[in-house]
Length: 148
Image (cartoon, rainbow, N blue to C red; front, side):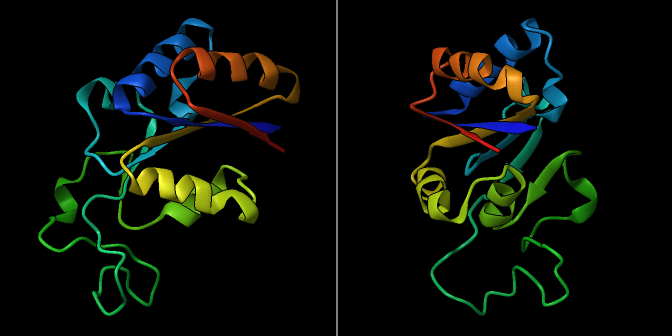
């Protein structure tokens, strides 16, 4: 299995990607997206796995946002009102590891998300990775990588 990962300028480009993937017969509910913006309706309705890093401060420890037990919480957000399939918290590195992004490249992707861009990825059979790379590019990805 390979993972195709792209950096997109915004969620509108990712919405275009998800439509193209669906039209090509891919199960978009297996796609993963991370952004610092709330999940838009057109993306939420696809069933994609959306990770929102939100307004979580990265400036220093002690904020209590991620507990020592590994749980994730956002102050002022009622856990019972969360959108299904959306992960709240500062989980950029965990997200990138799940997409097989190697340690040497995680900073590139994390900085893109923190700068307001959106990262999307999909695991596919090795033989489909090259064709999928083209779908990512034609949907607006500025960077597209394939990781094994």
